[in-house]
Length: 131
Image (cartoon, rainbow, N blue to C red; front, side, top):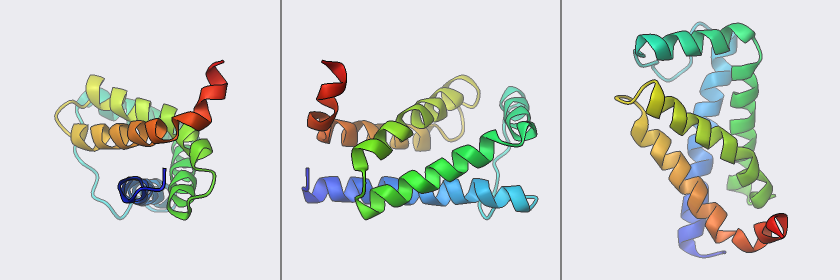
């Protein structure tokens, strides 16, 4: 579990999560984050607008992304952070698959794949959950 490959994947995934999570948190206080927002298809735009209008979904997801990213980079509670990230990465993937197929699918696949690889690498710690 401590191979250089695993360390690189954990660091890259942590960095991605911190950057995109921080962007969501910054958007709470400003009109836009530090990353340019892509033009979304109509249905995807409506969905994101409705999530933003709740006032709590995007800040919570952003905070969780930053938290999981920091845990991954610091190598603290890695299996716990991967479990927290699993539903987020599945939702990112499903959002792009169903609502925004043209943009962001590569990033969604990257996050889901890296999360899956790390879960596989830590599978011995997840086995007791299924027996």
